[in-house]
Image (tube, rainbow, N blue to C red):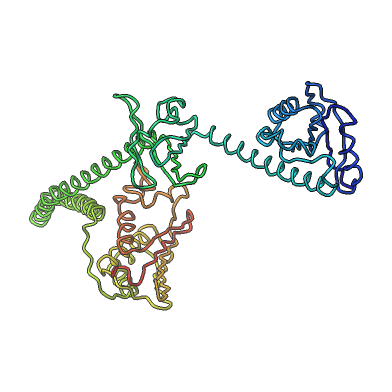
Length: 476
């Protein structure tokens, strides 16, 4: 059974509280019981309040003492319901009782037990609502006063009605100066904007300002939230400057490489041509060998320069593409046939399979360049074994896998295979030649066709390059 609500009665004496005690005790099933009758003599004891769920102040204390007690109870605690019990002829003696804390009245000798019960019930309900409201207000106030964002409430005349402590730092003004003062900020029309707040003639901060219209104490006002974003703003500016500088340097590098490649390629081609003429025009075997070495070294250097120039063009996105319908199987066959001399030097079998549609709309020269790099590498790094080229097509894309049974790629180097100038074997222990740009260029060419490329490999067991080409990629 639920314990009854405890009622503490403050009266001049026990006999003055007898009528109300009898009314309450006569209806114990209603959930109320008189816990204590306090003969109040001017001193309020907190232990009496701790035993109460509701308080009754009896007018037998006299008008002045009753009003004093009401006021003291209201100031001491605000959560317990307070009810004033008066005689019928005293209704005009307590005009300020409600403002002093009384929630309702009981007319002594007149109100029935049912009315008294209803008064207590309503008083307890109101007290519970009041407690919930006060707790919510306290939580909201605690949050507002402790957050780092400034909170302002401003009326239609731009007068500050409320400001939280964070506003002191953000606006560089004390709270006492802010309340009732005009809002000295240039308010943007947008509800979310960045403003500069001047602290002194030589210093200012950048703040993010947001506002929304609300109702405040029956008035239409605006609620502002202000956050100091000076650090974030400075970081963004530095990042933008760094980005701009990086883009400038990248453009400078691209321009430099393009110009240098052109400047080197022309005289180098002449040197190779003259070395070839010398090689063909003399009979001295040693000099002929020297000329042949010049031609061979020059061709390797020219290949490196051409690769750098091609990579530069790809970075600058100046590669022009011719769109046409092509068969990936036919392109792969053409590349394999062009590399036949290299295949004949080794014991390698090449198998090409097609499942579904293998045609895409793309630049045939770019496709052949991609296949030439990947199939050429497969031959280069496979001494004997097999190379498998498979195409699986759907309505949207064609998937291509180029697998070999060669030396494979070390797991530590695998994440870097597409990096510029990256090579697994370097220095004097280098086992295979090359510029380290072939796969980088291949990746850029695949991206230019809106495709993707991935690699998987196991050291000593071969590698697989997987490409996916959208069927209409170059039409975008």
